[in-house]
Length: 471
Image 1 (spheres, one colour):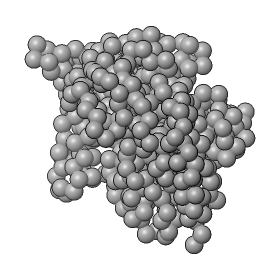
Image 2 (tube, helix red, strand yellow):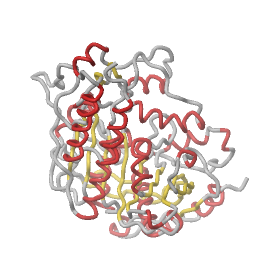
Image 3 (cartoon, rainbow, N blue to C red):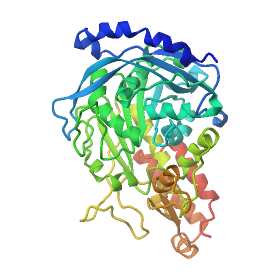
Image 4 (cartoon, rainbow, N blue to C red):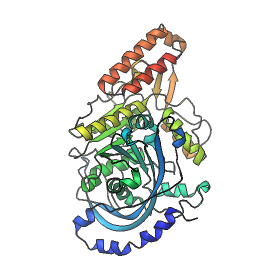
């Protein structure tokens, strides 16, 4: 079978002569983002989601990216303030990888913003976590989306899947030290080769996103690579841990660090309650002229909404669906806060309008997050779920069966929901109308504060109207 990966492999290797010339070039030439070769494919591949677009008139296709990637190394002090300097140490590592493109079919519906997700490979496969969280807003508000696999294990994962034959056989990412450059080359390709990636759409601004492991790498990217390459207009770091990932071989990072305060592009750090509970050092991130940090109370690293969405494709392509755990997954509406964060980033990069500063979660004298009388977190960004609670939303869960890594991960990261008993609901909300009116008020307040979008406000009210509260 003649796949795009196979046809690109020879061309990639022939670039060795160019790489040798680049190795002798000036540092400024090395620092320029190399051009990737972009090869669209005719059929959907791993992670295809067009079947779930509903009434949205979106186009989905897979593209293959290949080229020669640079490697970086930290230069000077890599301190906790994130003000790092990276230098190019090589520029001749061949790679072949895949990306998923989803975009409005009608240019009139395109809002000009392309979201580029650093696909998450914690499961061994490249999963589109931020799409899973924000897909309703992306489809509704006309963003274009590119999910790119930039890590070795992600490529190895799709190569193991027999249903795709040799589609990915020539894919190659030798090591993750080139992940930063593949990510830069993706944005550069969107600027220089938009017709191949986006058809008749022209991007006005490009925003990077990444969750969990990808968020930690994206934090390193924001501190060290973005200042060098300057290819993204904004960055959304979603669910980062306190630790970081190296720039290159031999680098030693501090035990914790923040996003640099002097970033030239807006950076939005969006954290769940679980993220700041397990990584309290991330709460040291200061808000600034170009940095915003939100901590969303009552939320988990993953949740029911996200795991259901991931399960749509992982069950089909990988044979994995979220397992049953000791208690229900966290059912809060964290996705609404991400929808709002993306909207704020859009306004920040296009009009210079900064997002609202939000309060942090409150902590006791031991440093633990304070809880209210219902067992829910105090402070932070508060969604209608927390302002008008029908449950305790937490992040303690466990598996009741399988000890396989993915099942353990889903149960731990998925958090839990402990619903209030009928007598407590009756005390809190004497009538159904009382409950609905309180949700309406809380949702209106959340919109006014900028924590949720109007469409999500309507969804929250509709859910309240359908809920059997009180029982």
